[in-house]
Image 1 (cartoon, one colour):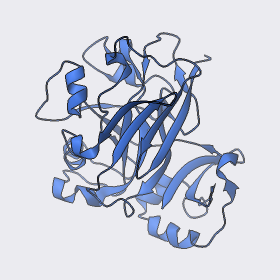
Image 2: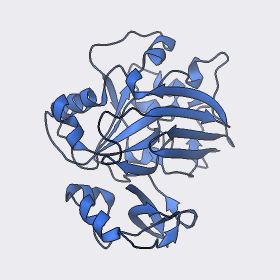
Image 3: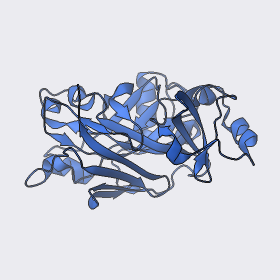
Length: 280
């Protein structure tokens, strides 16, 4: 099942993506996060079976898959090629930083270049949406806590990221990242399934990797962050970007207004966003 959050007739909604359209499931649960907290996805699937879409996909504005996550944990330096291109070393434990909810937009929404920098970089990633909460989750049990997977663009303002050793400022500019277009539920992507991640900028392939190339597995990431704090339904873990980022190319490749960036995961779909100047 594909599940999306969207704006329908001026109000927030969510529901299954079917037959080129969306079914509004807000009569069952007010948000996707609420459905996850109630362990209600099976109920929604049964309710939606055979229903016709309430609106075409192109008639709604897709929002971040989970617009209101409690936590967004982002894993850095998790592919060997990216570690090498940054001149860093592989660490025994994963590196994490956090993103705020308003730092990302949905599919086909503009990602914003802030007025303070032109060093706007792409980072294609696989996002894991938590369906079942828990504290100190073991790696062996990690798969049972995943609701599904989505595409993520961890858009980064590189000079602000490098102001100090802390990544967060360059990772949290308003509307600088993207999350979508929808979540594919974990029953369609069994835990441990190989996935291929591709980033394209204006049609040119910039990044490509598979999940087997991760340094720290998704299971380890879930175990690690759930040791720090309980994971809750609707929390998101963004699992790292491969080599090929714009900052490490010669010359550097920065995204500019009018560019189109796509993040594709073979088992999920394509997240597409235009780049625009922040009007504020």
